[in-house]
Image (cartoon, rainbow, N blue to C red; front, side, top):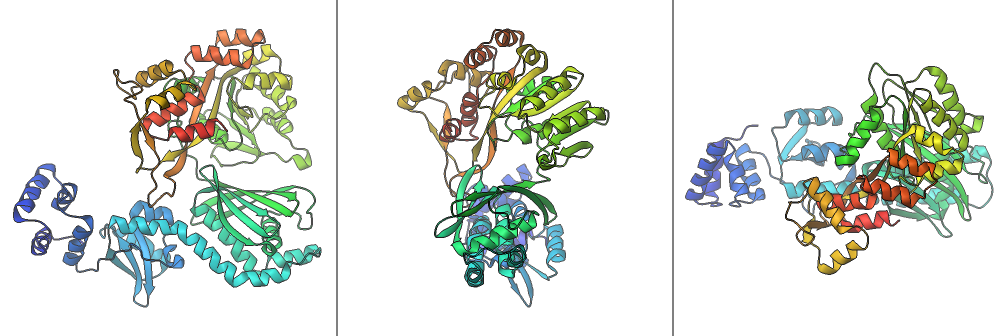
Length: 581
């Protein structure tokens, strides 16, 4: 549907939204810039977007719809998946005998209209709307989740509660409970909502009087819902059935996995159960199999640290280690490195627990400790498969560490992770495992440590530090050194100082209740240079190694956090929260 420009001009003038001279000025400017005159009116503040869209709808002879403050039935809203709705500014909001009404910013998006028609099987009735309406509706993808779940609970909990007595059930009774329709609906809803909200984990936690469900989103746990405690046995058993765990085993922890295909997206789930005082706690880790495809720059690497990693990946032999606590993004970083290394002329093999993302042309092996197939056994067998590059999911013990060291000594590039708080901390950790210092300096090329911080949304507020805040920051980082690093990467001008550098605070908007959305890494990359090797051989402390690494240009995690805050990617408060944890 093409808008007739002359009719639009006439409609705007007749509605007295702008004067004739304002319209003429906008038309001339539009011709010079080769833009639509309506966009010029909008950018110059001569007309509101809502008024412009109303005029366009009038000319096209289709209705204009405002979705602000309009509650949309979630069954209809979810006919268009949230990523598509967000990327194409298109919302399904009403269904009737006449067809499915969809609100759009661009009614010329015919391929998307055709896609929705095929997906829904309905006749599509396009309506024009404005940005405020789209934003309001997008928020409902999240807000509707609680309401949708509450409806299921209100309808179904009574039938669950009847089953929730204290007597022990046989495996057959538990299986029957897990296959009860209300329980299936609740668990499906839990999983569906978690994926929509980009949660990384689902926590199902039994209490004395209630069952609490929490989602970890951008590293922060949020209460998702509170259920009757009698719902716990059915939900836990359903998750066990899906992940092929023993239904009647409640005294020992269990681990399992299951996989679903949602809207063409393959999602894997890693399940862990743990006996607690009030029942079994269940944690489900969500792994989107097509979530890879990042670059190191996307993950937050930059400058000297980025160059050091690229240099280490050009090596034919040696070890590259990623360190950090659980959930800090180490595995994602290693997968990104593997994708950079993944070429037809090399053989890449991995041994992992679990295989989080599948990579084509990479031979990935899943450990199974319950049958004796450990990291050490897997790595030993893998080395007989003629690999050029090896990834070991985690170095957990002396045997795995020894095999990884030997692999790197015998002509392999080895990537792995190890649990320490800093890059320099990996050295004493390896020594504590029994790895001899001379073997460490012969093999380990680069060690990186990382954390994840939440990213600010676009509505962030700019500010500068007060003298007191600068003084407090100086207690945590070397201000002169930090200023020099910011200038060297041209984040600030050569004449800037701490009183002129802009930082940003989170500001909530329709898309984010706390002003953050998504996460990015902050890193330190330690290159094992000749001077670092000497310190390792002398048995130097972790602090001495870090001090030398800083002299040689290493930016610490905290310094990188301040760097990302100066870039406007995150806030100083978020950096301090994460690094102090």
